[in-house]
Image (cartoon, rainbow, N blue to C red):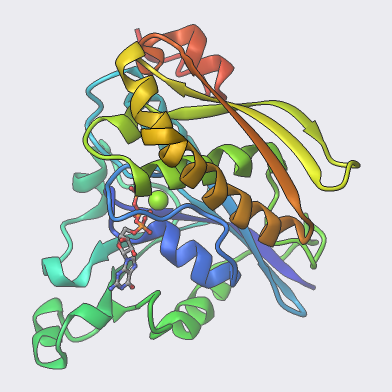
Length: 289
Ligand SMILES: Nc1nc2c(ncn2[C@@H]2O[C@H](COP(=O)(O)OP(=O)(O)OP(=O)(O)O)[C@@H](O)[C@H]2O)c(=O)[nH]1
Ligand SMILES: [Mg+2]
């Protein structure tokens, strides 16, 4: 009987959850940034072997929300934690011993699924300093691949028997439109500073998959009029860089040429607006006031 199940990659922002997802899947599927809170909605990645299908969920970093979008991010993360067969709790090795997961996640009780504590960024810790993490600490590096085969073996032991949910050839489950927005956001994190990448998102307006090149029209959204000029940049330099980064990633994912048509618009204060957040795909949190 084959094995399959859902595995959550969880932890505070910037610990390397998305980098690990990509290392597990073998493609740059999830967006990565040195800036925290890059992931806003879970990204699903698949890894299928002859008799096991791992369904990984790269979650938004767990934090104490300060505004509505962060509350929605936390809600999406907690919802997936509750639905997972196993939780990989990621903590950066350079930061020393990990606090208990429920403390860090602000949970009242430990989750029902088993929690594996895994130390990330092992390549940044000299061997002599590893002992401080405890004798049986599990270390991984998404940079070097260290510890990843071991992690997969442990996870396989936690998955229930069941038929595969997805095609063994698939690496993801979400529509291409999702990745269009994600790669534009990744570029925004790379090209923009301070609050601007946080106030940035995008919406796909038109998607012609059967045209050649594939035609995608997107609106880049910011919160204030003053941010529009920043997104465009001098002589259109910034918007060009954002579009080109996203296009390269999409072409790799699709395996065919893409024409990305980018426009900029203001959606005032969208991160604090329930209707805007719903329109942008953030699940509503019915428990929130
Ligand atoms: N040296 C090193 N850097 C890493 C490793 N894994 C991740 N990083 C870096 O750590 C930063 C954050 O990585 P992400 O994968 O985006 O972290 P995340 O946990 O998904 O962050 P959020 O989505 O913001 O919660 C990036 O600059 C990565 O390149 C690793 O194994 N080694
Ligand atoms: Mg991430």
